[in-house]
Image 1 (cartoon, rainbow, N blue to C red):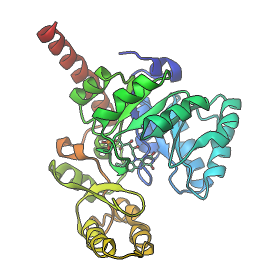
Image 2 (image 1 turned 60 degrees about the vertical axis):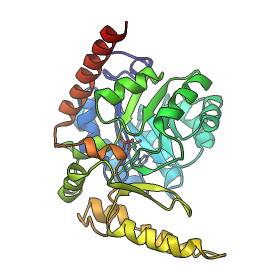
Image 3 (image 1 turned 90 degrees about the vertical axis):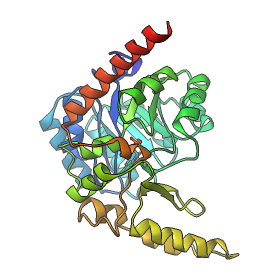
Image 4 (image 1 turned 60 degrees about the horizontal axis):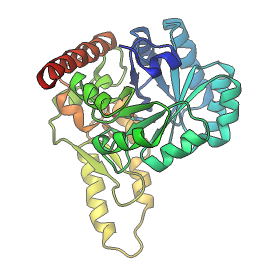
Length: 318
Ligand code: FMN
């Protein structure tokens, strides 16, 4: 299965493993790239040395292309930009901001730049500043989210842009992949399903909560204040809800407490396995994720299911 994205970055299958702060390290990203997808190391708010060590490790795991996800709001964003240039990282995905001020440097180093976008307007702006492709993420996704669903935003971005579009948010198997390819996407980015990859080093309690999740088990915190985040319901999300209800009634809501509640919450779940008080970021598709598998098995199942479902539907409709 080939696509413009496969040609652009030299990967076998049009599947990206989304950058996931604290989670997407060299172990997961290396396994995905080795299996023919695009593994992406998440830099989150990590300092340069930490990300540099992961880049070193991934180069030992595979010589295939990989990416680094840069959170532009990170206090270390500039350092990570320097690092990806020094290390000749083939692909950079960016989140939480506009990468325009770094674009010239990325291009000088022949780095493919693929920003994550939640709307047509931002997609068009990214195309204008020279992005090589965009990742359009619907609000079904895990982690920080926008307002529109994958089903509605993907075809609108595909119509508005000429560069390739990668669809993300709620793509849990080959049926989801076939659906977004039909909407005009050229590739998919997957986060939630890779959380339970064998090579994913997230705490086993986190994995267990994903595998146990039902369709209705995620919620969005901070819908009214700050940055909305999708995660599995737990004591932490209940506390967010309680505070939001109180603060919504005030003329001058206290927003600091939301930031305080979120401080270190993802790390708590990912590293310590505290799935009551930590943030178990995951997408709505978690209800479909039922078992731990290797990254290779996950990628192969997406591809074989996509082909199967497309062939079956073609013979039914054409
Ligand atoms: N996207 C980013 O651009 N940077 C991040 O640091 C980041 N962290 C995430 C952490 C978790 C635990 C999850 C589930 C998602 C995160 N995302 C982040 C979004 C993913 O890269 C991906 O786009 C998304 O998970 C796709 O939707 P899905 O979860 O429905 O598969």
